[in-house]
Length: 628
Image 1 (tube, helix red, strand yellow):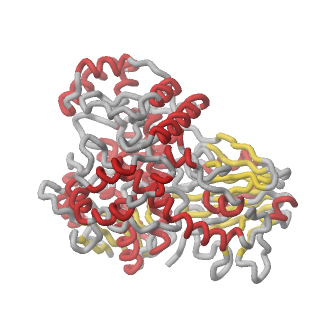
Image 2: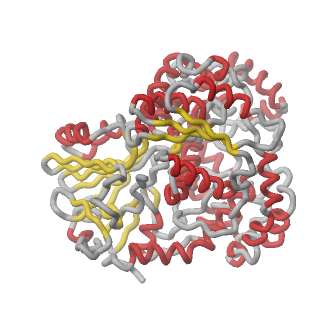
Image 3: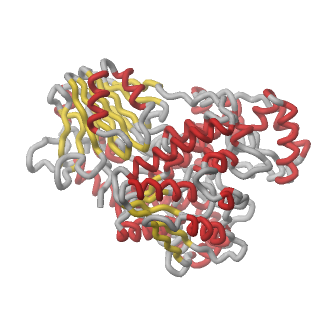
């Protein structure tokens, strides 16, 4: 089983950084990849074999240029070598980054200058911190915390209690550790200093449905190929929906082309109104050709929601948003590993990129008011929006910073009525009702701080919200990869790959979304590969029954988690109110995520003593620059 390279350190090409590098001797416990100068550059804990072997690392050199790609990509060493010969500056790397398919970190060392970046979604994250006058970088925030001796930041933890957050508030939970903006790369110079350099911008939404669908099909095909090219066996979810099902068809093609095998899985639900099984069975029948195996788990076969939420989750560098399904993630990762699958393809991110959220109507009223009225009338009938509220929201002309400042005053308020159309820049920012006054004040201060310097990803609200949600889901997938990759087959979310995100954003919002057709972009993109019957699905599985059954079954885990909670001792929550909500039926009037964020923060805090000890032993004790 191949494992993802995780927990690596990136050093600038200077003597001061080299002095802080763990020794590369036989007994050091570390392996080192060097700059063309010979100084240490990429450092990772020692594993069997050479650095990067079996970990998806490829490198190429030409003169004083060295390039490294870590992850799952369609590029090979020979092609990377040809690029290395063309590179004269860090800016030249833009051309490589814009052509990579899959999900990967990209690093370059050119004439002593370093470029380090992850992905637009943040699934491949990049972090940096200054230590002893030198900027160090890593793919994990906790590695830098271990190296620098950083402690958790209470204000950042307060922000993590937000039921629905914003990527404008995203930052590590460690003091002194920064997260690289996902549209930028980090430049490390030979004097040990760093600069954040923007390089990516979303495409203009100029394509119609047909042209955009063709671009999406190619991008998804390449994303799946990036995984299939590394392994002879793939795993994939098959819910029957228009996110996971297209990936299964593309994965079957890719596996057949490489002589591999596809294993699909689905977890049944007890809710009799749930219809995933109908559509999944139809898709499975159409996938009968080739080496494809299907498996369906009953709810008795797999852990219920909320299983093991009281047991500290180690190996993650921030609270895990998907905590209620943590044990189910581990179960499927182990099961797929036993089948030989080395990548688990999921449809996460599909809802975010394949359709525009309702705030596209706010943009459309300015460009095509007649069409906007038709779309608004249809959606209003479906969602029972208030006409007065809709007109009021459409008339709002707040800028993004103004919208954020307004949200900072509403954090302790109730969520807007479901009859109010969600036409704002993002989803409303609200704290759970059990958040303390101190936590509300800390979160409000962070929101105001973000509003003072933030700029929208787009001048239109719909593409801005798409990118914001892509980054939030990307953070959740990143955590999920850490959890699953540590026990078995890691999660992969092709919809969050850069080229796929770009393909969807290139389509006009009113064609990416329709009140009369479900996910028209995907239906058009896969019309020549999937049965028409599968593309006609207009329903989506709903999991509140599954959630309530798990909540009832594992109330003891919640009682354990919130018995003298650390978040209470830190003054972030009203403990009694939190316990009442957690141990009763799910709090009415609140999104499902309301309890998740509090569970995630509490679990993470409880895990820190063990996690810190492990990290300090691996990184801190062997690191010349460690601060006690």
